[in-house]
Image (cartoon, rainbow, N blue to C red):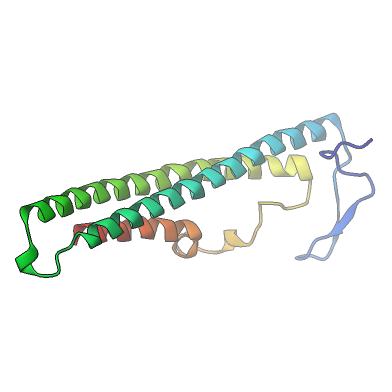
Length: 170
């Protein structure tokens, strides 16, 4: 019975960029160990990505709910304005600003861990998969880092946190 981590001997794939045949490395104890290590690292990467987006969704929902609550407490006219309403709005705004700042901080820390696991996977990839590119040479390397950060989903999450900070300040 073949281990799911060990590639078969006769499996060949065609690489799209150079159209040459790429063979998987012959299973050796070193390759098996590299595949096991890669699997562990890739699971950490998947976990960190899941935590990153779950946490971001929590902060988004919490901010939206608090903002809806604060908006419902806005008076319709200056005659209905009371110190109680102002106190509620000021407290909700301060809490919203803090929540949004925590959100931005959580995104920054989460991005650090995701990048860490990605880099470790890339470092171990050649040992585990030989010439087959899983994460390395994904085509993103040729793009300027600024353009990647501007259009990524993670950038949208960071911009959402900043948007809520601005909304709470208004």
